[in-house]
Image 1 (cartoon, helix red, strand yellow):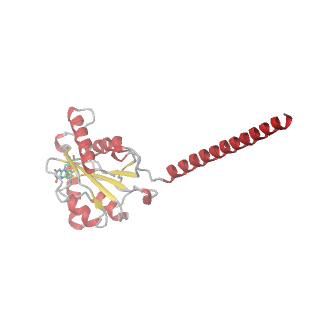
Image 2: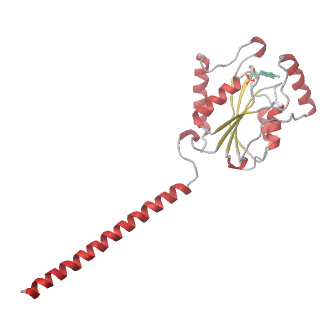
Image 3: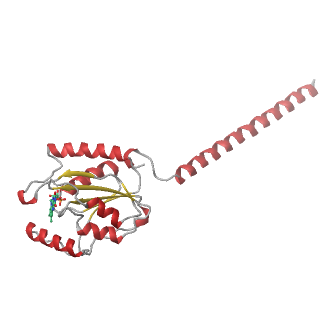
Length: 225
Ligand SMILES: Cc1cc2nc3c(=O)[nH]c(=O)nc-3n(C[C@H](O)[C@H](O)[C@H](O)COP(=O)(O)O)c2cc1C
């Protein structure tokens, strides 16, 4: 009887040990699984989110009367990333006529105005949005300076523009000429305003809301993935 009982206890003890060992193994597998899951999610590139949110995005814009700035901020609100206003070492004159004259001389001679703006950690950016007004139906010289200053090989350029009613002119051709190794997405372009008449695009206006929707539709269409 005693022997019988001790045999039962022994068998029961062995079963218990097996059960404990299995539970330990299960726990180890679970820990390993959790560890691997954490590692993998950390190693993945930042591609989560709709409309490019979480991607390595840089938005660089040139704006004199804030129309392009408004568009840049609307884009930034939607896609995130770093937003930078392009600044010159020597600003253009306040006077509109004087600026038109200076710009036309710069375009004629191919002068590239030196920039105050510097972009840190350039290599981290995959998508570079560039915003500019149309100047003399051309790409403004400061934006040309910017494109000449950095290496766009393997980068995706996303142009956006405001103008005084005459469209993009030769801006996109110029971008492709300066950055032949970049992928250039379809540009967003919209009427911004007329400086001599004092009309400008604003965030709060009814038109501002319309433009915001146009931007969202464009972002949807060009797909940043
Ligand atoms: C020097 C200069 C040249 C311009 N040339 C043109 C032009 O050729 N075509 C056009 O449609 N608008 C032209 N514009 C108007 C601007 O493109 C338009 O007002 C734009 O929305 C201004 O953007 P911003 O407020 O971001 O500077 C010119 C403006 C300036 C200051």
